[in-house]
Image 1 (cartoon, helix red, strand yellow):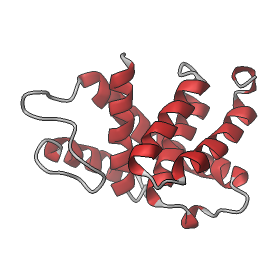
Image 2: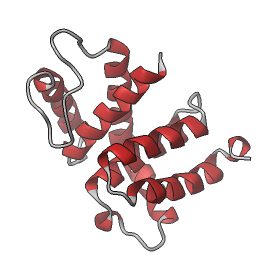
Image 3: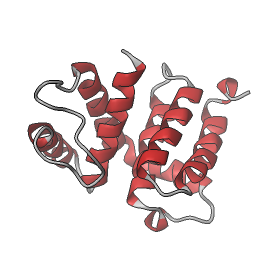
Image 4: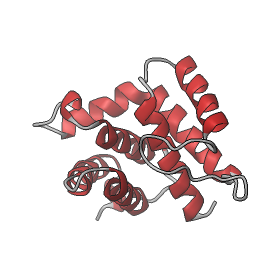
Amino acid sequence: MSTNNRRVGRECALKILFALKLDEQAEATRLLNDFWQGFRFADDVLGEPLETAEAPLPTAARIFAETLVLGVVEFRPVIDREIRDIAKNWSLERMTAVDLSILRVAAYELLYQPDIPVRVTLNEAIEIAKRYGTKESPAFINGLLDKIAQKHRKSETK
């Protein structure tokens, strides 16, 4: 799978998770279906659509986005606990929805996708934060994810 497909998949996952209450699996499945059906036709709140009739979204990007979204939904209690433990002075409720969604996606990768190198996960999260977050988002996200990576994938962070 090309890096570009994974970036597109991560951005789609961010957009889906941004809109998702993360209450239950059924809602995630419904939201995924709604997202893919309406994806080509309307801009979403986080930016331009990545798909046009002339250039459809690559299947690999879609599959990767779905893996990320469903993984975050399934493991959200563990992921949120990890983020909470690392973000000492920040409650999840205090974080922006975009930053929290980026953190959840990247934390899922760090915890449950060992085939993705730590450096790739961190770099991708930072680049996506630059595009969709505030000017403080990249540093905030980098700091938290680096601590999660050091805790869980220490051999890769040396």
